[in-house]
Length: 388
Image 1 (cartoon, one colour):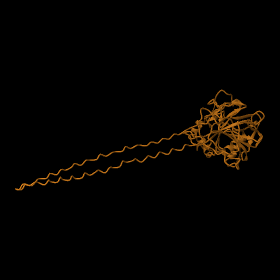
Image 2 (tube, one colour):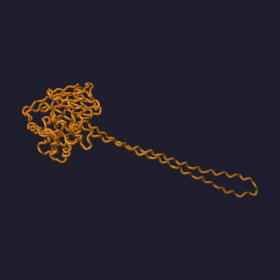
Image 3 (cartoon, helix red, strand yellow):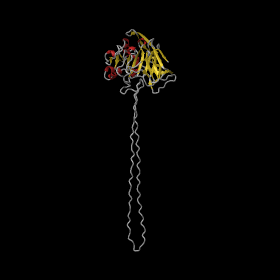
Image 4 (cartoon, helix red, strand yellow):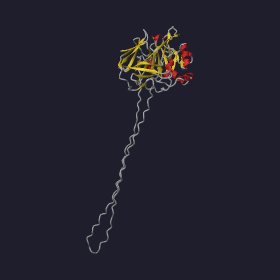
């Protein structure tokens, strides 16, 4: 349900009336002639010639003045979000700090709140090859609380270095925290007591009831020195895709009506193409998924699958004893871009950790997308992705 905004610009012209000028008539002067006395001899007098009247001057007409047209003002350009190509909310700044919020995807935590208001959503595996979301919030407002928010994972380092986003989460493992510190990653950790924008909310039991007030966090960027210091280290947003109203796409696409993704024997999710809304509809375990804020189905304009190698980290188990996952997001690999009900083979490349990920189609042209929310599915190569 991507947001849709339109700006209308009007111009006015003033019309001038043409002023007619009346001509002034000049009167005719009649000359009177006095007759001389008659001589003694009576003679027939010669008639006196009639005086020639003076010619009246014809006034030269003044041409009507045609007013110069007033130039129409040039419409101000509409700010566009670099993450989804959509207009930016009036009071937000596309050059501001983007929050990467770690949102839970456990069945006990569904439905999540405000994922439909994220500019981009990244989903990837955690322990047990179940998945977790990272909502990137920059250009649109949220409504109420966002979450449930959970702890950060190793790949938060890559998202910060790649996209230039500020990780906002609630805790992390000791190994993960050590990795974050070694990389110098800015991290707003709700467990350290400095961030009052986290709170328990709703009827769910812990740990599935921890949420974040994103609007209050945005306001705090101007008032909270600790948060402002973290934001100063993030860097300007760096988007992986470009957008156009009529994107250029290759001719080798395959029509697709549904995408099925499986990361282990029991964890499956996917997307169904809906031609009426021109969006992909989300499902988890075969059930439709909604946003708790709107009550409506989660949708995406574009779904991008990025295939990566994944490493199982046995020395850093979660509280249940399950080993963590480490994704290799520096390098290159294959992927698929699903847009407009069509699948396009693609490739990703990120030569070093300091680089941003670039995407190209099979023909080597850069991936260009239509405006709308993007879901990036980071899927290990051992996972299954099918389309029909």
